[in-house]
Image (cartoon, protein in one colour):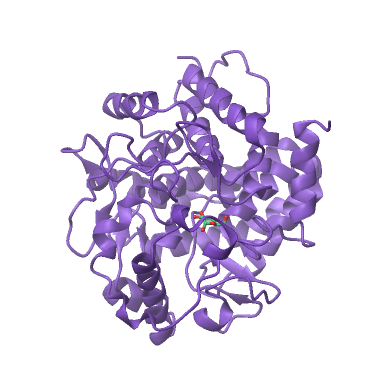
Length: 421
Ligand code: GLC
């Protein structure tokens, strides 16, 4: 039997469309933003040049204002909805009109660190584009302090309960008639409901109706919420981008300013009643009042604290495999439903970086062992039931293969000085 390393490499090669990688065949037939950054990280373990190509292809579709779209529709595929005809962004190649978690700078730093010489010219070419994307985040989406999203799909944690209080205010009646494709690829019970989908499409139609004008969407659009997940990912990515810039001899004071402002805004997403970071509706100020995996990304940005540690252990100890995407003790918890309870290997990998960097080496190793157990049992699925390990969503998934090669499939490491508890 081929080793899991070889299987993971074969998945990356098999999903490679030449310069960009599909998340999985069928369900997700295009290039997705944060999936691509993870794919690049995975490729860097055995094909460094291909890793940089992936990031180049992603950033080549950056909009003039700096936004990097969440999907790039390189080739038409009738198996996916909503396609380019629904988004109508007028870009070439066609793209969606929203973005996704900005992990690219953090992944670029890791890829560069894995081979400094090979990456020198590649990172230098990428840097101005990453800088422009981060500036867009700061100017267009951090106007309220924490990072705001205008569609649940921007969060990457598409259907998580964090967005419920914002979604109830979205009028889905304007969605019109359409045929979903996702439910033809995977078990419909694991996917969002028709009511949710109508609202997702209604927000897209609003974007089209205002010509994807970013200020108008933030000021008047149907949905605007502060996302703790993106806030922490962006904060970490600002730090990583600044580190890259310093090594390249650039003046990084602008990036440091963005990072300082974002860090100063963290109290706005700390929900005292919940005892954790929480999503917040920026139209009403209301907290979502749900503990989710977005809160645990705080470790990635060095924003952990003893109260969050307690919440982490409480939620994690209720399940067997990995960190659940929603609180197992909350009424909304569903261990197989999209982002409403299951564990995502790729989110575990990000939280693990945070745990290690904030001195929780043993917890990082526990998370690695649990994530590896899921993949050893069932293969490279999109996500898993954290209680009984049932594999869910798409198979042969790019980011699961990538994080196996970079993290989950690695042997346990002795405590490093930085990671010492
Ligand atoms: C789903 C996920 C999103 C991911 C995409 C492709 O929409 O929620 O995070 O980027 O699939 O894998």
